[in-house]
Image 1 (tube, rainbow, N blue to C red):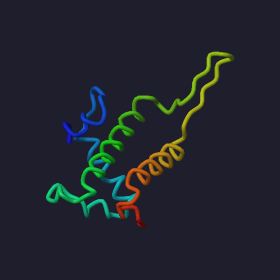
Image 2: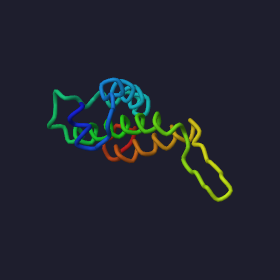
Image 3: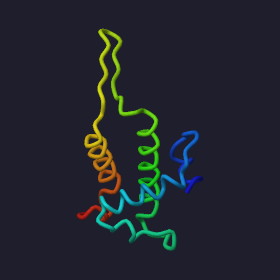
Image 4: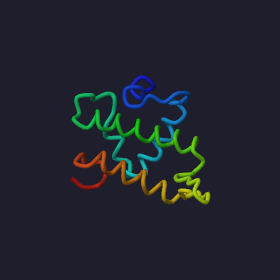
Amino acid sequence: MTEEYQTYYNDEDVDVNRLYNRAKVILNGITSGRIEEVSEDHPEDYRYDRVKGVIALVIHELHSRASVSGVSIVSNDGYSEHYVSETEWQSGLERAVRQALSGTGLTGCM
């Protein structure tokens, strides 16, 4: 998966293999296990490339989340910071995954 990940994102120092397992758990939850319908055994499945892309997306988001400590906005004019809560982050990730998998039947509807 490391080579596939690098075709989508140019991140450095990403432990793709470790984050891949976390990404699969998250995607199994969002798709109610339907993500397992698409596998490397059937690369001709029209959904295969979309699934590889969404796995890379989740790995990237997990890696990015760990490196920014939740700060999303910083202003030096009177100094203020805005933190993204875990719930906001999860909700945003789920929206991105559902959008990326739209039309595949993997998120529950076509």
